[in-house]
Image (cartoon, rainbow, N blue to C red; front, side):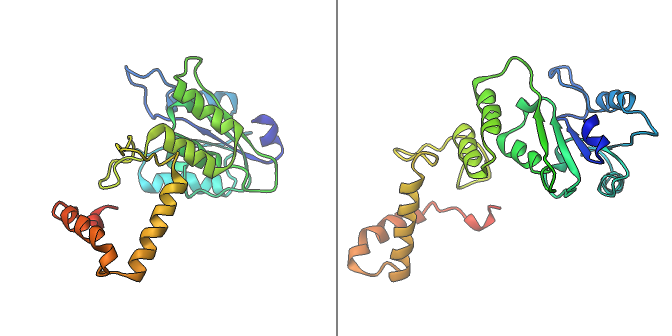
Length: 228
């Protein structure tokens, strides 16, 4: 961090929580801010802090200070996951990285490396990791490919309920698996699209069984347009 700041670069330090709880032994965002303030004292260094409990105006003020280069370090929760573009930032330190999902880690890592200079993303974890957490961290270390990361995330978390708002959990298909059988499911979708383009009302005799099936399913159909 010191080396990059000495070059004129900026640093993100990300934590998953704002306050400590009795059940989760995680670093406290505020205590970390205080510790960094001691290690990187003013006036040589300036530190911003941003988290979800701040008022919108205060949060935007701190963000803009960092964007303008008035602060060298941004201590934050995942509120910086998207929508923050600071090409001068070259270091991302993520504490308790095992507590983040793959998509979050990938989004956070994308906050650095936006300029021409080499950038670094440091994932800090506890020693005791579940097998799933270890696979998430290993995936992040092995690839920058968003498609591979998304496929791994889908396999680990499950796609959720495609007819509702649940965003994780395994589907109970009789045979298919969304992560494993992507090519088959894509082919099936293309065939269904071709059928509907040729025969939107399924009036052709050869589509009679499809029409009957959809009619029986339609009795319990949900209003999909209400699902965001």
